[in-house]
Image 1 (cartoon, rainbow, N blue to C red):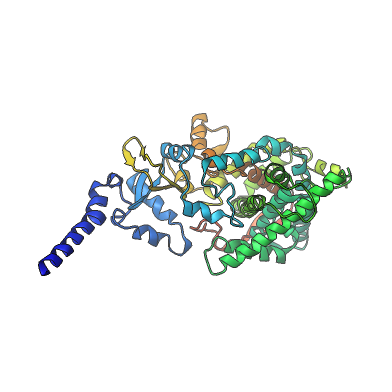
Image 2 (cartoon, rainbow, N blue to C red; image 1 turned 90 degrees about the horizontal axis):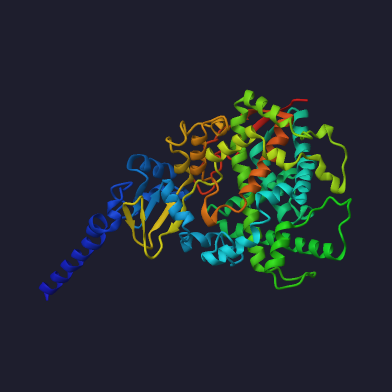
Length: 507
């Protein structure tokens, strides 16, 4: 009996040694991939430790790539990729998201564009929305021009003017988040139903307290999700009423309201219910619009804040930018605008095409997106059942978790010299055309492939509008920039979550 027990223990030890040590370190196809840490082949403890407390471990992953190359192993069943060929293979090739990763973004228990695991379902939903988020649509949209005009002239300028006149300071981090929410909600649900966080500081703080808790995986997360979902349903109901009223009574030419562009599109394509009062909101529509509403402010809140921080350290660059902005016709200047009403409201702004064509403004935003994207977190995927071969030499079997981080792509010194420095000039057309093209290939702030960020053109346009409105009329200088390091978390907010600036009128 004793000998049988000894044999059993021996067999178990042999099995464990083979399964957990010999196979993963010597025989597994992944054993040929360099390890980020010597423990990575046998246990994910190293990457777990780097990701503790809600962190993403980005600095450690980047360091591993610098030491070991473009493909590194982070755990027994996880690898990281930092190459252009690998990126195309994974994301353009349409590798699926892991279920645990996709399900984080479900609202009301219903999948939306971001959380859909099925490529077909995702493609069908994206086809519905792609037109109204396209660059050509946004640049020519009368609704977009009207809502932008109201938010800039009636909300933003009132805050900027009072701040400058009273010699006060302004936390642009909070203002940027508020503007992002106001722009996004107006485009989703109509201007009359939009939030007005820009002019309501307390409401803004309350909203973003719940908003931030969604991404912190804390005891407050579930409560925050319930509050945000309740708010999302309220906005959907208001948009539904607006559509019903529009169908019954044509909008007056003196009205400054806008259509609920996104809600209207989803209602037409997804809802089985006709427009009527007190209708039960389709959960698919509610889930989709809430996802856009939650994600929308992040580009302005994070990237715009870092942009303003960098500009505030460079008065001469502010002057160059102002000279360029003043070529717009009309320039975005509140003191020279007539009192337009109704459909004339949109005429207070220059054409979006002329704004989009400004080279220095575009370079400044492009460089800020490169260095300070709203999220630098790994974009997780799962290798397909048949596996894949990376860099023509590393075979990876199916079911392996694989990811790329925008930080690693954007800090490649061979592509972006002085990659840790904010240098907008690198994007100007005067630079070497071949280098410009190479940088564009490596630029990954919005992802790539079939899951490229749907709202990328919307976010960039909003940022251009806001920057043009501020720097046409004001200079900014730093009062308090403590904690402007970007957090190693899913959302790359500045650590101090504030940027206090002084505004000085140039008029």
